[in-house]
Image 1 (cartoon, rainbow, N blue to C red):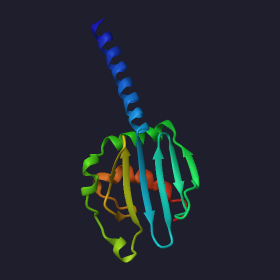
Image 2 (cartoon, rainbow, N blue to C red; image 1 turned 45 degrees about the vertical axis):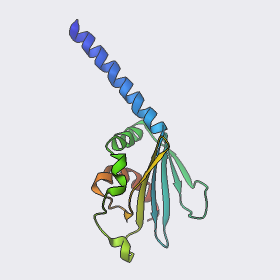
Image 3 (cartoon, rainbow, N blue to C red; image 1 turned 90 degrees about the vertical axis):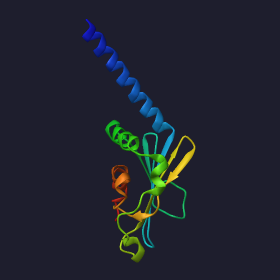
Length: 145
């Protein structure tokens, strides 16, 4: 009987934690910005949607994609790994963007009204600490590269 009660309470606690994580994403906006002279993408993940901006001179959304439950779980898991206060201190592993060898990318999180932004890095080669979440977002830039 004790084992059954423990299993029940464990399951209930896990469901509450999942609801808290989903609520956290409601207070969070993830942004991945990629630019060169001839290429522009701004990817925003907000609640359960991905908004893609392809025109640097327009505020209109070029494409809106609803996230599946699994995709949302992947973003939540990647977000939970972030140390928000440290994002600005992460060093880029390469410098191809300095000589047009790669597009310039930045990653930004706005969580509960506070913004945390990375230093610029080469598109598709983020700092190791941002790799999981940036890779998830960068997949939405691959339509016209």
